Length: 285
Image (cartoon, rainbow, N blue to C red; front, top):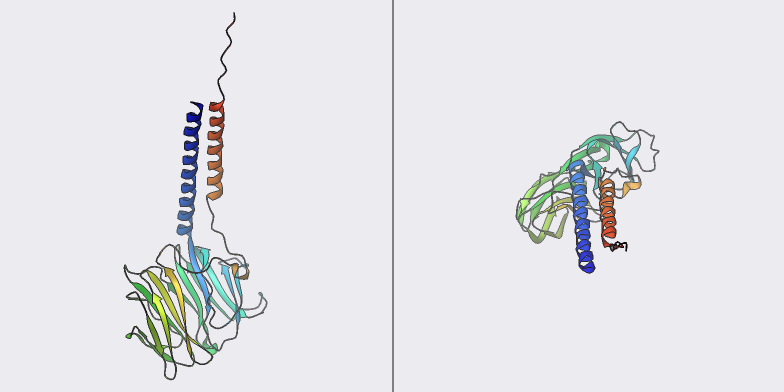
């Protein structure tokens, strides 16, 4: 009987632990998705020297994120940010954080939104563009867009699997997303005097941004995976801090764990009490 009672209580204990783990995980996921957006930073101006990029929360003079010595063609991983208002500022690489930015732009991060903040155009006309990124594709299809960051080729045209996709995309411009059939095929980009081919796999549900860059001898294509079949979070590396400190989204986990620990301790205490053999009272003779 004692063994059977112990087995029953152990099973209850394990079930409660599993339930609490599920609750804390679900609560964490819900909080993160409802209060977080994602931002990545890019330097896509061929004749602009390397820069330092700063991101500030609105009204806060201390930088939330800092990305040092960003050179042409660099695109950071997505960084999670609490929803809210931000400012992105560019300074020359190595410049003091107190110097006046060369460029700045405002950014509103919406819950669940994803953005690319890119330096586009020639150095003489450099601008910071805030691009709204897409996180989902139509059922059974993939989504793709193009950023024309080649200065040597003022216009480029794109074919995918031999079919025209984008025509006369000018330097510094960004195409809209368009749905394509999933395939592993050749992406061909051609300008007036240069072209480039790349075999790219677009699977159903994925979202891609293809960046056209000036290489040392010819055009170069950079395939960025914006999302991999989920609208909950974009693809890309985990938070790196960009040389600074990434903001933290408040989490209910500490409180949930404390509550869970209390419940489990109570159950263990109850188990200990119930397993102590009852002493038979002695009858007075």
